[in-house]
Length: 263
Image (cartoon, rainbow, N blue to C red; front, side, top):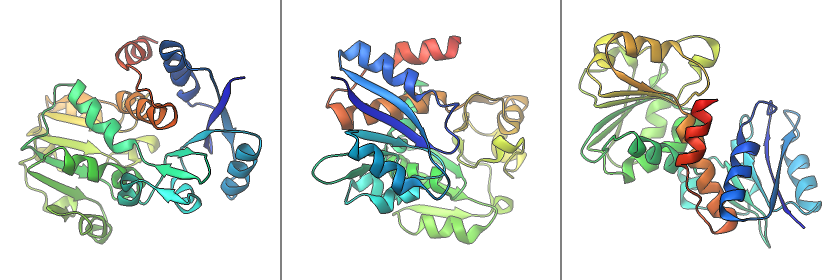
């Protein structure tokens, strides 16, 4: 009998995760069934308990439940503790929570030819998406990481938990970053974060974690002559890491991402 996994979120009907994990399972000859769970805004714990009681083996967790999942899990990986958010749950004797977003981002940047070692990185946003990737960026060997947010105190609250990470408001940024990464949700509302144009124009790559749409941030970067990429590759890479957490097998991602890009 197939072992059951699912992605839980609100909303979740648009998720590409079932298709991605079906491709991973086929390629690695793993017998799994992967579905969707749309839980009410205040219903994460009940939905997760119900899935586990019915024999579910693990969950991917998307918005708005990553912090709920962090509180839900009895055991946490170092990555989850750094992020204070969980996007991957493995059910066993105890419920284990991990966060694969950071490794997903770093691997996708590597796929794009971005060498983070010794680089200067600007990360825009101080919410859960940003927290999920700070630790991985630091571990990748960046020379400097600045977290920028409209409310600088929120950026500072994240930065102070990591050695060598600084915080800034947008207006104080200097144009010396190699990579500019948007971890805000501004693009989902058709808006752009407040990064100054000269900061953007000096970058080698502008990366938006949002995928499936041409955000104002990406459009502004292209207009400035900067190479751009959305977060579709990060989605695939973090999914592969989740698959490894569950199954002990790390699937190849290149063919899956190529097919998604072609759709």
